[in-house]
Image (cartoon, rainbow, N blue to C red):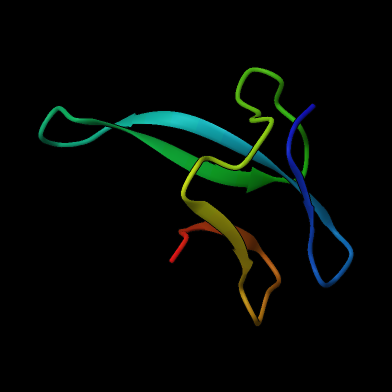
Length: 67
């Protein structure tokens, strides 16, 4: 089951991940929220050391390093 976050406006978003290759040849995991679940890229939980916050204006969730 994908991790779900319901924002202040009542929309539910699901956490996904993708691996991106950067200019120097490095790979990095990219985390993003989507309105539908993609079973191949969905995550079951928030990664360690991260927390979900929302954009104040739009209500879109995103991950931030936990302080």
